[in-house]
Length: 207
Image (tube, rainbow, N blue to C red; front, side, top):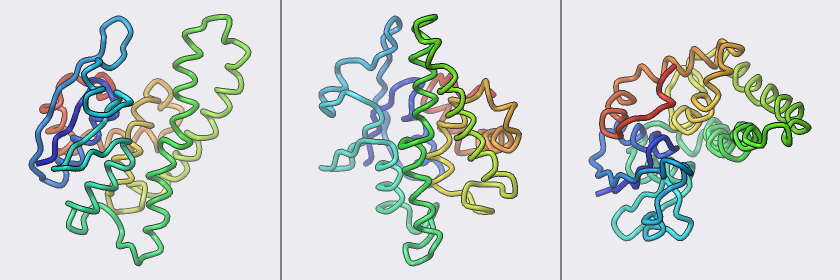
């Protein structure tokens, strides 16, 4: 049985969504952020030394990092669903999107969050952050201009892994209509809705 160590309002929500899309049995261990600091609780350190979420356990295996978790679950439990076959050229492109989500796209979003807390002290960095946000969100928006999902007409793990980028940029999405429409499409999926029911409150689900 896969156990998901789920932190409220975090990237672990997309792991629940993936499991619902695949119809796999799983158990949730709920963890709550500190109401003041918004940090994960110390008991997550008992699961993994970084004390971060998402983390899953699958029998003797512990897997951390959401991209690795998405890849692991689909490879080992997906039965060929939600990713291109490894012998197809599209598989390499699919892998790029799995890594791009956290490796590049989330960086300016996280910088905006943290630098914004500095007030005037962070003002010199804002133009560069805004430029990088426009670069990455524009890139994703253009990708979705002529396709329903990241990989084309077929929904895949790339959409699940990239979903947090679209949700984290919710106050900017109106500037990127294709990105905004994609977020609305995936948030309307029945499996997404079931994951919300099981995972509990998730602030980024609001469009």
